[in-house]
Image 1: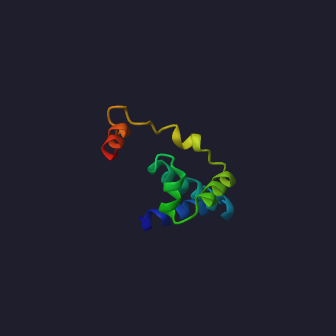
Image 2: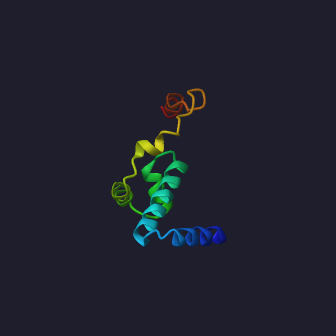
Image 3: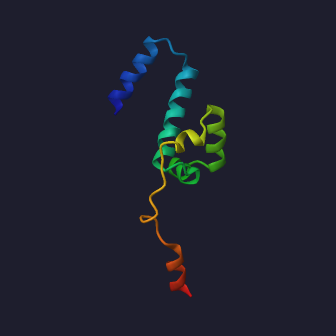
Length: 93
């Protein structure tokens, strides 16, 4: 992975991409991948990154990363796969 990052940085440098734009592109893609891995759940993504959810939300706004963009490719599991909460509640009564 380190080698791939070195190649990417060299490509960005040779394309004369400004530092601020390179950092912005990296942050945006990094946040997008973590949000995808957590199915758009900001709380879980923030915990995984070790930051507060509000910081994640603010950074997403600064980068123009919409949650709808992340959730577009994520579908909810079919009803037969989801846990049935009502049967769990009956066991506690």
